[in-house]
Image (cartoon, rainbow, N blue to C red; front, side, top):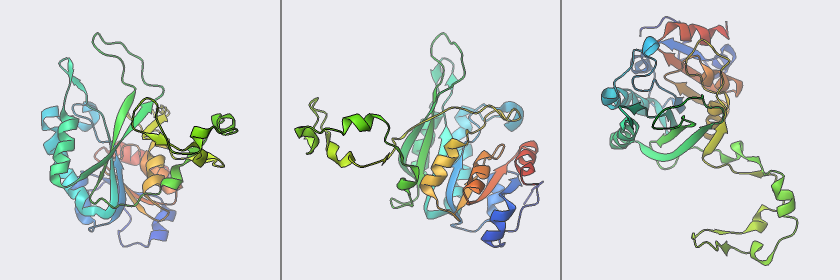
Length: 284
């Protein structure tokens, strides 16, 4: 294993690893993970270099080559992910020659062929997206967070991410009409029904698959930093305390830092030594 950062040995007891902080490796995740056993991680969450993006640090991968490049790594992810684990991929297709390239759509189809189940697609709505103007499109205000699993039954802790009902519920639920106390089919003939009285007495509700979070610009040393709330939401949804989280393209280490704060064990991998040093510095 080629690593500029000396990791904690894999056999160290979980309690010791948590106290010591995350484990960070310098190198290609495909190589680093060869030293890890099968069925090791409960969650893989990452935002890899997008095609042709961040050339100055990661070198860039041509969109036409991206799927082949990425599948070589997700084949390893399949081995180290537990059968009931989850893989979250934050990615967004770019525009090439006046149109969106299809490499993300091609990747989804290829991952399904590789054996992954495309279980869900979450949308990260970036509330403070970067300003800009283009002659044939508007600025990007969202990114995909794709959920993949190896099996249809996987660990998911929905109660951990419930959100407050909101002030609207106080007035809306104060007085219920006749259509609120039964499963009332939508009058717009959408086929959906609802029973409003089921909401009475609830303080928390389950969220949607659209996550409204602002980008964070505090880290000037990395070109694409996760907002802490993004990995935190998925870590709470798909893991419990003591579980193992992997970010194979860890960048400045946000996902691993959040996992540590939530009492999860975590491993981060990156090919850029400066990023690994930044991530490790928090625990030095």
